[in-house]
Length: 75
Image 1 (tube, rainbow, N blue to C red):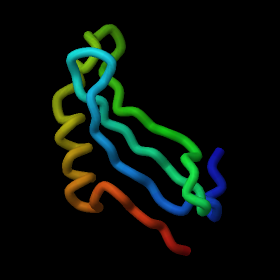
Image 2: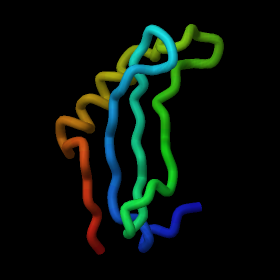
Image 3: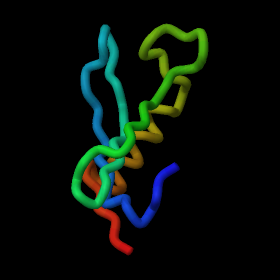
Image 4: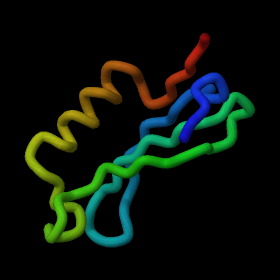
């Protein structure tokens, strides 16, 4: 559970994974700037590491293009 009044923002990141693929993730920060939770874009069950489903990376990239890599939330 996340207490939404304690969420201060999020960072959308793409970085080399542990292998020959790129990891895509969203780090949700609390109001003090500490990471509260990290969400990873995952490939389908049984797929090779980094074999994202069609459209997954494009959707993440579009989200990052629309909101930027660092998003602040205000109530």
